[in-house]
Image (tube, rainbow, N blue to C red; front, top):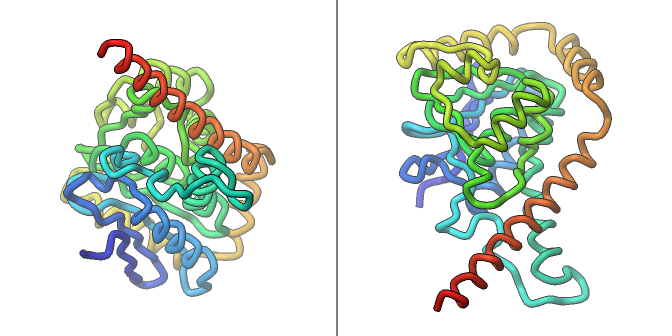
Length: 262
């Protein structure tokens, strides 16, 4: 099986590519664990001045791969060390969500190169980045309402900060799919480029950042993050817990309805 996370270096720019193009780079444990590791490596590597994250093929990230079990596939029987299904699911998901924290908090600029559809946890990964450069096929969909879930990967926190609480609530509660142009107009994407120019323009900006004053950018980003608030870790903890509780409740309600109908 091909590596599901690809890492390349180009002149101080670290490119991280989610590599499940046949599934629009939907997330499973097999991609989320190495993705978090890749983000951590990029954060601590002094040779890296800017990080670009993207998806292989025609999509950025379609969110959790429900057909493959998402983050909750490796649950073991309840035990004193790791608890039951809920505790284990929370711990695994929270660990995977380190990708979002690292992209947001690492002391170097991060860019999401949104080459196609983004949904679910994918909007958290994109929202975690400092900049979002998108192509014409970069549709935007929260999608959590479609599975009875509360949101994860920092998505509710990031998008409230980026576009304000009013627009964020519209995005999450109504769950409408936006075109690249509509998303750009709402401020979800930083810049919109033609498909054949997206990579070139993204790397032009990334190289400029990588070649720029790295310590200046380090503290600039710290200042920008501090300007938001200091509740980020608590927000991720709450998201991971509520994502676990909401998805399990939805699944149990659905199973109960199936038994009743049967």
